[in-house]
Structures are given as C-alpha cells and as structure tokens.
Image 1 (cartoon, rainbow, N blue to C red):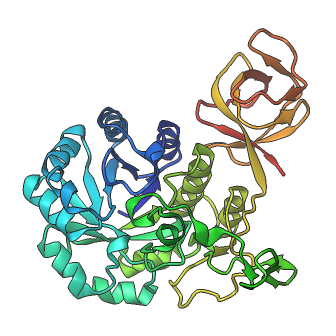
Image 2 (cartoon, rainbow, N blue to C red; image 1 turned 120 degrees about the vertical axis):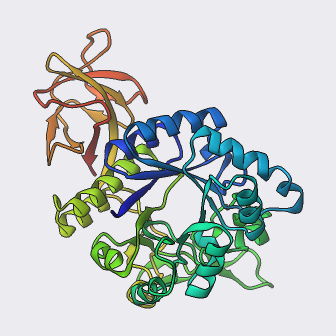
Length: 394
C-alpha cells in the first residue's frame, strides 16, 4: 500500500494531517531536527502524538537529520531509545555516524535515510541497507526512470520515499552553505534564513549607494530561488516506479496548508478528485510557481518570478464545533458579515457557508471579524465538524 506522508510542526498541523487522510506523519524532536526550534516537539509531545497517530492505525517518524558534530554523538544512544519508548515508528537521519550509532543502540527503532544523504544509485542504497536502514528518501534530483532502475536492484524490503509537494532549495538535496556564508546561520544545522529567496540587485563597488535591479519581464528576478514542487499529476508514475511513500514538505507550515495539501493528494490517490481539480485546489495555499522538479528531466531555467508567493484564498477561521444550527469558529483572518466562506473538509465537497449572521460568545452581532482567535458563532445549515476550515477567495 502506498503511504501519504505529511509534515507536522504543531499539534494543530498533526490533527489536520490525520483528519485529512495522511497515512503517516513526520515531526522534529528535541535534537538534530533541522528546523526552527519552534517546530520541535518535546518527548512528552512526541509520546502524545504517537498515541494519536497509532489510535488511527498510522505511523510517526521523527527527524534526526541535521549533520552532527562529534560532541553530539554520545547523546544519540539514549536519544534513540527515548524516541522508541515514546512510540516513534522510525527516525529519519542523514549522517552516517548518526545512523550507525542509533542502530547499534536501539535496533528496534526503524531508520530512514534522509534526502540530504543524496542517495541516487542502487549501490549507495544497498550500503545504507547493510548498515541498518529500511527506507531511502531519494535525492530530489532523480528522474522517474532513474528511480525505477534503482528499485530494480535493491532488496525487496528496502522502501523508497520521494517528495511530491512543497518547497525546494537551489542546492543539491538541500545541502547549502549560502545562509551560513551570508548570515552565519547554517541550513545544515536547522537555522536557514532562506537568502536564496530574496530579490537581488547589482551594485558596482565604486558606487555603493546605487543599486541596479535585475529585471526580466517587468519583474524582479529571484535568480537563486527555486520553484515549489507539485507532483499531484505524477502519482501513478511514481508508484509504478516503486515509490512506497509520497512525501509532502512543510514542517513550518500552518494547519491550513497541511489540510489543503493532504486533502488534495489523498483524494487523487483515492480516485475521488481529478488531477485538474486538485491542481486548482493547490493554488489556494501560499506557494511559489509550481514545477514537477526533475522527475521528467531538468528544471525549467526561468527563475524570473520563482521567489514570488501567490495564493487564491485566505484562511479565515477554524471550526471548533457545531451545535443547534450554529458553527463555532475561531477567527484567523479578517472577514465580514455576508461573506461567502468556502469550507475545507474531508467529507463536504465545494460547500459554502454564507456568513450572514455572526455573533460573539455573548450573542453580540459582529459585522467585521477582525480580532484574531476570537470565538465566533455563525448560523448555518451545513453540518460542519471540528477541524473543518473556512477560507475566502482573494
């Protein structure tokens, strides 16, 4: 069975991933997790998440994919055992020393090799397998045919995972020193400032106060920024090539992003949404221009607007419950009485809530909802559920 793997950077994102159909989730822990500290879960949080995941028959993976220094290795045996005790089904690692140390300390903890290990040939995959790995997260630079060829020469029980959606770097499988060189913040240690996504201009050294923007087609050129990956139309090809797990990027994303993206991919996999409808749905979240990456060959070389983020909808509210013909909603962004609010739901298709009657918790009518996280009550006949989201077309 093919696995849909979703990113989790908060409890809200975890709930969204499970509700909208992810088969597994991945999150960061207290150590070597390669994202901002705010996206890391404590041991207690990991245990709570693992319980929630396992209650639904799904799986949880913990990222330990930062490159490690020597003074961090001695802590790994205890860390591996603690993750296993918390209920983690696997750890995702990129460092050879981290993998061998954790495998020796806790053989029961399954180990997956991160995309940052840049594994893209069968010999490397078999070497990782011999050291204890049970899944390879493929290098992002591979074509579908290269994946198929690799799969044909590896053990049957060595699984392959590939990214299908989300942000990409202008670096080989995420290995980049630009942030470290410019700001002293290393992306390989979880502290990337994303300078590749900035808009740059030329400056002549004898005229330091005069900058010359780099412009193509009347827009600034984001010459170092990549497009975002979107492969909802390639799922059958990837599965046929031998990919076991389809991975969505985005541990720093909101529950709205996770809900929409997981929902679109889940429905395409289940045959309840067309690829064309899914592609339109995926325009509703914040994204750079989409690409299918290297799967059919080289990336397009037009980066004139690759750093420009767009979205067709704005997330305005999270449904907390429904009772007596009234939706209880936590406000997230501004909307007004009379607005048509689209419902994002795993069961309701194209439902629209006409927000004609809005009150606060005391029953006071609200004309403009502009207080973030204010609890509101909206009259509607739609049988909304906790976890449904509301959005408005921009």
